[in-house]
Length: 406
Image (cartoon, rainbow, N blue to C red; front, side, top):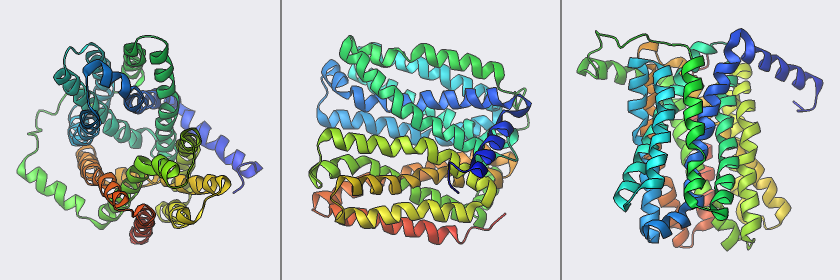
């Protein structure tokens, strides 16, 4: 459908009216605002890394380890986030994550030692992971009829934060104290935390007294749910898509500079284009999930990266690389389809915990893809590594056609 066609605009207006109806618009906006901050600040770290290195006398290895700690803590926080959301309700977890993020960022900029810096960074990564699961699990109750569109809009705020906050932080740090490059977000976290507590409905008034935690019987029941075909195949698509995203984003700028001969500035612009397109792609993908279902949506989403990665080794012109970047960016929409499908399929009583398990396992396994990709590049298999990502895209399609339709 042409994005400028009257039919497309009519559908878009209808979706927006539905998202705003019954007072839900302010809730969705608050949730998106928290995600904008959480993911945007996470990408401030690479921008301010030179200042952190100078302030804490970090070498390149230690600097890389700091980012590894950040991402691993984020991966490990998924499961506890889901369990806490199931037990205490999303409002407490969402607002609490914002307050925790403000406190841990304050620790990062006031840390008196490298140890404190690493611990505070791990705490920040863990805190944002708590928000990650709760912001998903609250949406099915708010938008049972528009889950894909609501998730897509929220997910797009991530790309907005990653596009806006790091440049602001870099400009502030260059103009004065680097601490202000982190510190300017502290009052924003606190403000959004208050707003979330005020507008988000309480899904649980108090902890369930009969909940005995992660019992053996509960584990068995959860594993029985996670072994279902309707869970395994979309979870596999999510894992493959996440692996593609992490490997591609880790090395695409380096590839453009070292292999294609682009300047750092041009490579950065193309890389920024990739994320900027996500602001459009994620809501469109979520809307497509609502309208045409999981299979057709994911086939289109996976086809773009396959074409991009097969063509990339043979494309040298700037115009061609722009097209490749646009095609590759469709992978950004896979999570806005697979995650709502998983959320809708998981039973209410284990939704948060089950979703947390799936995200934890997926993020931990996908974290290996940049290492494998980098090793291939070190052995002069840069082009072949991208072709392997195309194979993963093909795997996404094979798994997609096995997903049971609604």
